[in-house]
Length: 119
Image (cartoon, rainbow, N blue to C red; front, top):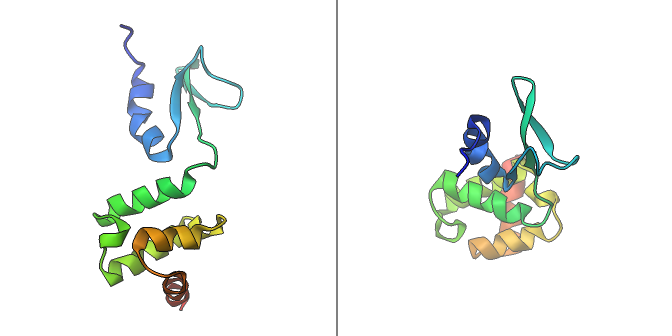
């Protein structure tokens, strides 16, 4: 079994956090981000499409705050909405409804959290 290049191994947590895929130099496509080591192409970083972006953002916020959105305190839910907003989550179509469902609150509550974060 071939040993993975140290750069690719080091970037695994980054790729996982982004929902991206690390590929070998042979499998790299022109659309992948080229990964060079000492002037040699050793692999590529294949970024995910838009599909699943909001889920990845929610998963990251849940990890940061230490619990699923629905189990957070009111204050932590407000913080979660602020974090998601800062990361651009609410620019995605139907994201307010999706986050409201994930938090077990109403859309109105999410809008209130967003408005209070702007004040």
